[in-house]
Image 1 (cartoon, rainbow, N blue to C red):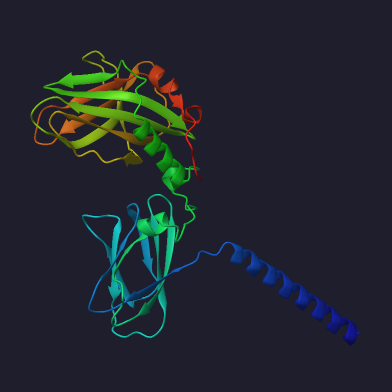
Image 2 (tube, one colour):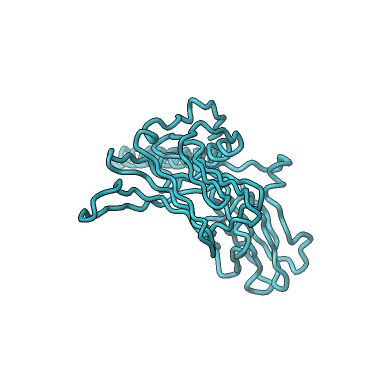
Length: 295
């Protein structure tokens, strides 16, 4: 009986080893290769990413790091301890969903202090997998959302021609509404035909009741944009600029409108667009545009 029990135990242990080894082998297939990086105590290393950084995590207290205030795609890193001997690491996730991993060692005199990750990718040295999901984007990979927004912006076509606002030499128009996977893409443009630059303070998206009687209480709901490409801050004199804003999909009743309000910084040339529900339900499908989407 002891021989049988021992035999069964050996078989179980071998089976467990094979299963565990198989799982480890499967994990190896999804391994994210790390960049090798050297840092020092007396100098700062700068990493320039293709887009803004959303998340950064240091592997230990041997490192100190921070995102540059005026350049959200630049991470500064340096050693917090002189001459540390062990290897450490840190990870970065950018707003387009790309994941970067770095293994870090100490070098008192590193040969390189500044790295351009975008240039390295363009030269084919490394292609990252865009596999990070963001809660606010639902099932849409950040890379897909980014591609759609950039394509709409670059194609720069206008198919909505009845929604616009104009005053004091400034015109604000809605060029198109696009829909894909539960998200709306609003393509707007500002034309400044005056001699005074138009400085944008902020833009709001609100669902409001249509004009009602004086005794009726008006209800409104503000919508929070999820993404904007590119950021619009100033429209120079005698010029124009456009952008694409991403919102969660929604509809409104016939007695409501969506108001897109654009406010001028230190000025009064504010603009307001009103969108009916019929405009929303007739949004152009992104799939019909034959946009090349890389996931």
